[in-house]
Image (cartoon, helix red, strand yellow):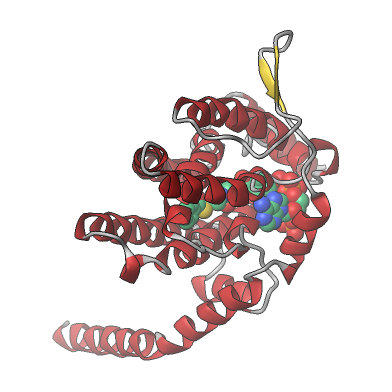
Length: 314
Ligand code: BYC
């Protein structure tokens, strides 16, 4: 009964728009759902450094190299804010990393596709960061204080990433026929995987109803996907690019773009670990974790030494 009352009180706080803070009482299921979603989000930021990181040494100019380096570094920062925010729910960073490296935790499907040309870097900035910001602007209003605050800063940076991606796309789309072909090819390969980032259709999304009830999400997967399509079709057409979807059609009655069906078999295959780059991505993360072991051990040894010295001085 007591548990039931606390559930009602908790729901009232959510319905009143109050933020839930780490030391507040919360249903165990709310805590678990947040750990699942926030840790997956953190992993996505870190694994998401790999596809673009692949082009840092081959950027076409010093200016582009510096921009790309900063962008990839920003993604690392996003991962770190999100791991810290998730730690406030009572899980350690070690446990989260272990869940990623042993395949128990997911990360976004989008990062399991290869970056075949420099144009992929531009299109990731435009489409992938563009999708991320639509989703994350919603999450900046999430009911869990540390998650929503982390999102505010992340959204500012993602917004800049998207602008730089679109600026590069627009430049290349206005270039030579070869450059136009290269950027169109990248759009053709990234469009559908980007639509998949928003997750399964609402009818097939087991977590959405609960997350919406608790104010973690305020829009459904399909609503966010539609906002993304509406915004990005207009941006593509503005620079003369085509969207690779024969069913794409403006619907005057709804005021939205209708679009074709996503290949859900491909989506689930990637989510289950069988996408084009899943194995390489996990191998890279495992190696990075092993190669960084000495740094973690050295930092721990230094912290121990500092503590002992502080104790001696007391
Ligand atoms: N990929 O019930 P559903 C970035 C899973 S990185 C893989 O709808 P939910 C960037 C889902 O986890 C930022 N799995 O779930 C970085 C669930 O499985 P579990 C990326 C997916 O939680 C570098 C099952 O399918 N953004 O911006 O209501 C460079 C059923 O789904 C995916 C985030 O991480 C997917 N795409 O909604 C550039 C956003 N979709 O966990 C850019 C934070 C679904 O029950 N996350 N699944 O085993 C979210 O907003 C939500 O968790 C999702 C899924 C929309 C992803």
